[in-house]
Picture 1 (cartoon, rainbow, N blue to C red):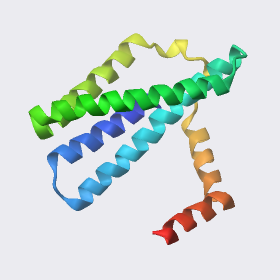
Picture 2 (cartoon, rainbow, N blue to C red):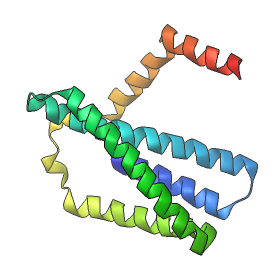
Picture 3 (cartoon, helix red, strand yellow):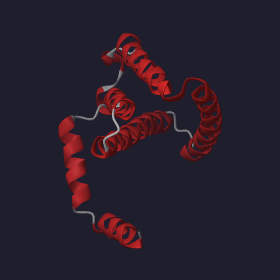
Length: 150
C-alpha cells in the first residue's frame, strides 16, 4: 500500500509540475489525497499492530506520533520553503527524484517475505472496506453536513 501511495504522489507531483490545466491539477490533488491517506493509513496500521503485539500503550504511541508529525511538518515546511526560494517550481523535480529513490529502496531493502501474512491487506479486503463505507450512515451524514456548510 505504501508503494502504491508513492506511485500516486509521483503522479500528482508530475501533473502539478507539467500542466496548468484546471482539470488535470484537480486530478493531481485527488491523487495527492489518495496518496496521503494510503501512506498515513498503512504506516499507522503497521505501528499499531506492532505495538499491540508488544502489549504497549497505543496512547503513548499516538502522543509521540503527533509530536513527530508536528515537528517534522515544521522542519519540512521551513526546509521546503528555503529550497523553493532558490529553485522554484523545480522543487517538484527534486521531489520526483526522491520518490523514485524511495520506491527503489523499498523494493531492494524490504523483501516481501518479512512482512507477515496477517499484516497484508488484499485488494479484495480493501474493496470490501470501501463498499462498507458507502453504507455508513454516520459518515454520509458528516459528508452531507460538510458539503452544505460550504
